[in-house]
Image (cartoon, rainbow, N blue to C red; front, side, top):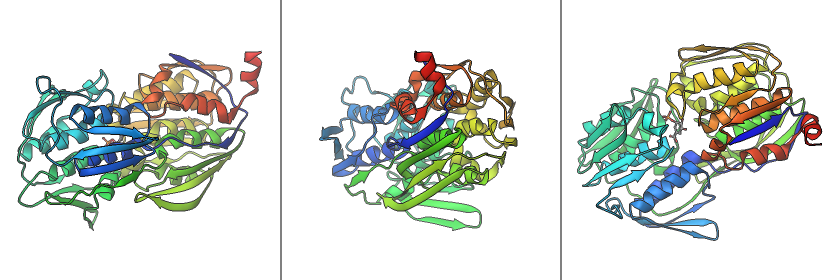
Length: 437
Ligand code: S3P
């Protein structure tokens, strides 16, 4: 599918961003392994969180939609079982979070499961979870370091695991496996903080010593049925925050968006670049900080990004790159090699897409260098089957003169099914109006 975008003269309105994908996966998985009935309020209809639900259903978990609230009949820690034991294959589709977190739970189940994914997920590195799960005693087989993953679970042993990659998915996989590791504490040691939704939701101890963060869990940690209210997704909001910052005229309000500091570093960065952003009405929703975000237009200046902050804006780097094309001076993004193993190689995909639109962008081994401001011209660009690349290039199209055609626009539905219609509802474009006449 393709989508055409024209230059926007203004971005105006109030937009209700869909719920957070990362938090949704975790809430569903924890509800499934808790004894009793939990409720998921505002569970997103985007593809990735829906993949988690279908995996859980294939493991025998009853999940019922009651007036828009998902009621999960949890089966307890050891209650998951393949509905069809003759075919113990669980399809995670495009969702790396589903695969890596579910692997931690299946490592504790005394049977063999096979986790598979689509073409993109089948290329992504899984040795990062295989290594700690094997150390804990699970049998894990990969194909050249990637899915399908065969996991033979059972009784696990606790480990202390310094994270070799800055990945919340690996941290969460090990913590979930720790629920099945008898005889002590399983501890994940981070040298740079990654998103902390799992430890918040579990309510497990976190200790900072020097520049290290120790997150620990015991197998007797109690899981209590509860109601999880999922906040709006900062990573989805980020596209519109940048759209409003770049449009010649803008006044955009995004109410009730998740602003967990381990996710929302882009806000501080954009403010440092000169963005006119107001954050108000800060509050908590199911233990997660949320706030209303108002954005107006302003001229941005280039920035240097690297080091510890990178995991806290890893999913927002594609849209940061778009902002950088319109910022005065050089923006340099380093320490972000992880972007090469996301749903696509996001460094290459953004360098290619933005270059086609006329941006001055250079690909680095672990990031991007962008000179701005550069006037962009509409062209055909390719999403590379990656939702965040599709949406970031869509926002670049709002800045470009003429028409920008995003090939593979349907991949936005992985995290934001209504993205293109929401974009149309808040952006006003003379060029689009003339083209439609
Ligand atoms: C996620 C963590 C990040 C992020 C992904 C979701 C999560 O991946 O890119 O979109 O929900 O834990 P890594 O932890 O592998 O960096």
